[in-house]
Amino acid sequence: MEMTENDKKKEFLRRYRECERREQEILEEIQRLRMDQMFPSMVNDGMPKGSQQSDLSDYMVLLDEQIDRLKQERLEKARTREQIDLAIRRMENPDEQRVLRLRYLWGLGWIAVGRRMGYSREGAIKIHGRALQNLKIC
Image 1 (cartoon, rainbow, N blue to C red):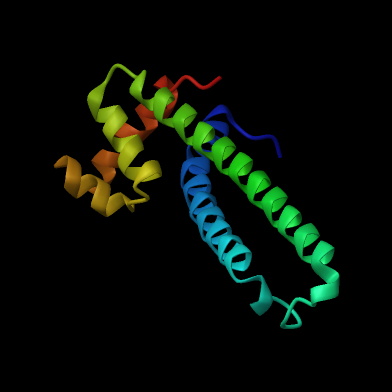
Image 2: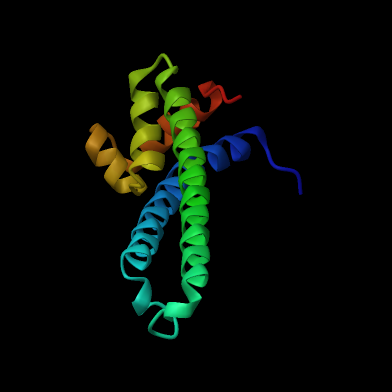
């Protein structure tokens, strides 16, 4: 089954929260790797051996490379979130912008979106439909 244009737009908007979650995971992973760098003797089998200093420095280089890759991925996720936010900010109607922000950036359900906007659940869904029609994605 082929995706409709609105389905593609919803998928695009849903990526915001996915990217946000992944960015948080990356930060936690970087923090763990930095702890491993600070306390390498506590990693894996225990103590680094004096005769194997090169093993320890190789390990540190690998940790640095992992951290660099994670930082690059985090940057890509941040760029995706910025692209989504920019697409919403470009919209002319403030109610349409708001419904998309509340639903996709904040992750609120329809009842909460309606309440925040001063509409019923159905009213918020109706604005959402118009917003999707007017949303321009690249």
